[in-house]
Length: 430
Image (cartoon, rainbow, N blue to C red; front, side, top):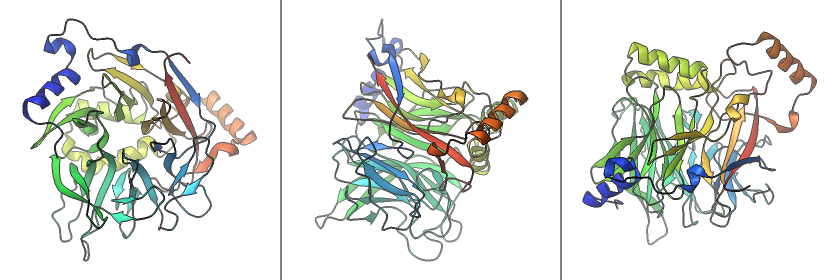
């Protein structure tokens, strides 16, 4: 079921995405999220990347605890206690859970049954399909890539899936490289489908439709608007690997598209503030390392997005998966009425990469788990030889073993140590 159609869709687009002055408003309405004081603290417990929250406040996340189970999906309380593995009876890796708003199903991404895999399930690559299970780990069902026969269920990837606010639809990014017996183009598209449960209790995705076409651009889907009118997504725009944020206002035949950012940098991991007046997103715009330099070069050379299928994995790998000139990111807030942007954190100045964020419904706080190569391993640019040598000596003398873990599920299956920490942002008086 489409969220909005016709005139009502255009009204929502005008009032929530188009700047206020474009629809005749003399002054923007009060915007507490954009003007509130922001306080950021490190959470006592470190969740995995992309933590999400059950309606009762339990945290759900994928993580490799290094005990031999691989990357699996866990629940815990917000102090990291009462830890329970939901997928440890399934072959690893299983990752990137998404909670249905009703709290009755958990969608997750898995490589189960696939031989051709790359990257990490849920984050992009090859071999990831969408699955669901009950909150206690029971009643596991596969939702996508259900074909049978040699090659029919290989060379696909379904990732970054999100439930609509009413729990009746799912959006995700789909990549099709299947040249064996399919019609793979090596291009990305954005799909939306209805989530249904049969009288016998079997869940499935029905009425699958392509809402953003496989046009050569790289896509990554993000969170829905709180009113269900559409969703945020990242798309390479104009030139190769220039990743910008967009909003898709759903209509029966696809999207009414609104571009939200225009910066030669990596812009993604976006979600609305609960009042829908702002969009909070991750960007590398203030850190001119490898990625930003590369994107500016593609803009100067006018290299089209048709080359993204050759570049996306390699550029992401060089920008984030190795420590030399590695990109770092921060969180920013875009005021949709005025177009103003404010920087919310400066963790990127210390080499941190901020990935997916989510709202904690019980506290109203924004939560994420950020990642970095430790100082001494990471080599920032421009290079400061003295500072680099001091960092390496400090790492050797005092290795931070208490918060280093091995990254075992991303693109290159790296064995370099990574640091993780979970951060909590509070709007309003601290």
